[in-house]
Length: 299
Image 1: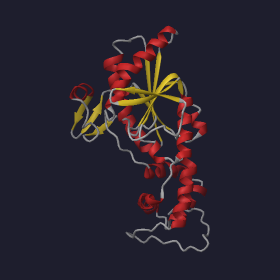
Image 2: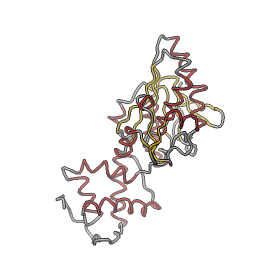
Image 3: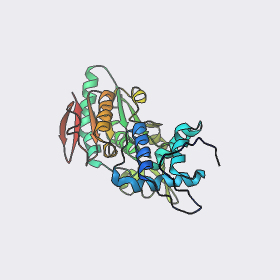
Image 4: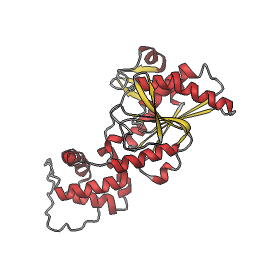
């Protein structure tokens, strides 16, 4: 078992983990963990998510052979090797639910309206590069869906333009999956038959994405809440950031949206999840309607 720093917790007797025994996250420990996660990522666990956090942290505790939630928090915060543990912690506390062509109306708006509009503006300025950011890319399905549609519907019309697609996520595991470009049937279940046949190679129960499409996207680890990291994410024409705001409280939402606003070029567009809104978060964007969806434009 790894050595790590521990400290006492007044008026509290942490429950110890026996082999196969389920730990209980005390209210005091839950509050300590909630504060640490919030300060690190902006993700806020509401009171009714205590059980969810408990079950997710327990898996790492058992794996490491640590006895209590309190000791695990000390390990992450104070142990020299704790920083390496952060990637596993982030994977434990986030949900990566996605699949190809998940938000089809947004993709349709991108290729039928937004990109032609932006390309026209850039042509007048003598520029020829389009940059698109999938800001919560998970295992890459959104970024690659964009790549496939651009390759089929935009590149033939505007062959002199360069198209850069960047995918980022806070979880190292899903970034690795995105870079590999190999998926299970669940991920491709909504993929139009045309794209599935043209750009995927079936290998048993796996579907391997064609190299041409993989080469159109790059992926890297990024925390949207981190000020320093976000300063590097600039000059994007379109940003997709779906189902991220649901993890944040109002203060964190405002901070992240301000980051995304600064990452966009003037005239660029932001898409968020269908259940999300910028109402009460930012007035800096112009709400723009498209068939079956909406977007936010930076003017």
